[in-house]
Length: 315
Image 1: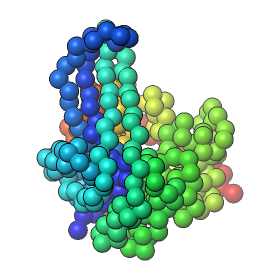
Image 2 (image 1 turned 180 degrees about the horizontal axis):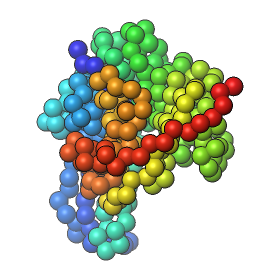
Image 3 (image 1 turned 90 degrees about the horizontal axis):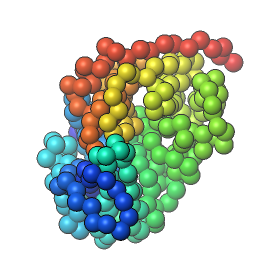
């Protein structure tokens, strides 16, 4: 059985193209499309696998696009535990404008799932026996807000560590169950706590409240080009931003989480997992389009990762 199982209830095919210039009404000739398997948990699984993790991905598939998604993921060597869906798997679309260096991302909604379809995904999870369960991504129509919370309950019943990367009501429901780790970005955490969180003091305070309340053992907060924070009930670490050229930010958060979970599953400390996560996130932004981080880039960036422990009084 895999050490890590990821759960993606709203998977997608990610399409990436290059175009010289974006403008309305005119036909714009583009490069040939590049297609990658996508969706939060699927991306986490791809990166964890690249970094040596023993991982399987659970997700529903429908139609020709669903079959393509499974083929693309298994081509990378990631085991798939799929369930059937009556709706076609969705697509996302990203265009890179060569003239400006700007990137345009179009995220399509998932189609409504029947209750039997999302329940089948949970049933598939209950038949696994991993060390870590990662529930990541958005929740499509027809799927209850507590879907990830149900996944957390199943995972804890199996004795697995639980990792959640989602937002709003789905995040609130999962946190109510108590999880091992969450990985919000700054916008998601600000939205969740209803505050702007303009500096590290406010950010650490918000994270500490979640750990002090017992909702999460740790919060890994990604801050884009400002680096990242890792906060537990008794400690906090600050990762400084890496000096790298940003090519594409697509999948950086998923790459961060993939690096972190793969390292934790290998038996390393939370601090070491945070170091690898920062390197993996940095490696992702160096990759074009919808590509994710690669092991060689992660290893090259790892010595550059600067982590400082932040002292604070424990109440």
